[in-house]
Length: 445
Image (cartoon, rainbow, N blue to C red; front, side, top):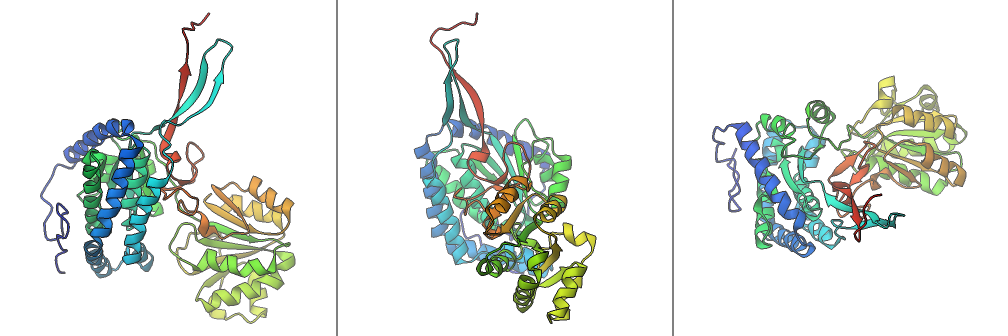
């Protein structure tokens, strides 16, 4: 394995063996530096934060070739280690991806700054005026696997929302993450902001994660992005609040009043545009009255794309009768209704109608994203009100459940929790509100 190039100043490389370190001391140092930087960022002007973001984007473009070289090194190691195709896909950077990172930084710079925003100002009978002000959370620890673009996205969103960030990427992307972090640091310094406002954990030792999630004196919230096992472990062991989603078992329901022109394109995009993302559809529900009309057409499209269908008994019989290749059909088990496949596999079930579809989704969904295809307004409104997920859609692909598509510039992650932040978490989700009072000498009687 050739050594990864030391392409960017101060970016560590595979050629350098990590020196032995006291992980607890190292993480405490990062925490102290982040806490100090967070106080500076909380008072930083919008202009300074935007200048840093623009400078980071310029650094990423200027060092694009080096970023790709670092990523190539990560990919070579990942393939040698036998990582799954879905993980390789998430890990891969190309020229388009580098430009997307830079453009994402610029897009966040163009977004309104939420910090200091005042709302709900009301005059009270006592004479005081009472309202709320949006403020940063403080220090955000982000733990993620494989995706090197998260380093830039997280840096952008944390910085613009006035938060310091400690980023712990997966060992699979260590070279690219270090290279991107060097660009981020350079941008911060150019704008006169603390270089410790965004810190990437330089060790791949898992003890660092344990330390990060148990430092409430330095870290205000943890955002884990990765597999279900990682997120479950972090949620279980953390002594810091966690913004999370465990998995993405997303559903598309074809209603008995669906528009025929919308059915196949929506299912095709929701399932097959990308298999390894949390907003990819994993379950398809079809109303019984239209199953013989739509399901064979959907199945032929899926079979042509190599998608395996895990079918309920009724849908299996219908698709066999329609001549769908037997190799693409499998009898579904109870576990399939819960599954996030992240692969060309789709659970398929015929339901009586809207009531059963909503009951099934609320019973088996992970609470991420669900979509209904219908022209019936009442059905659509019931679906919106009664489906208990963080994103609910009418006549649109589940793949739209994304911070960029929602106009957030980027996202720090998806939350399926029900407090503070839910769905794609952008700038507003990385802030809180405090009460503010304006008086003119009033005293309480």
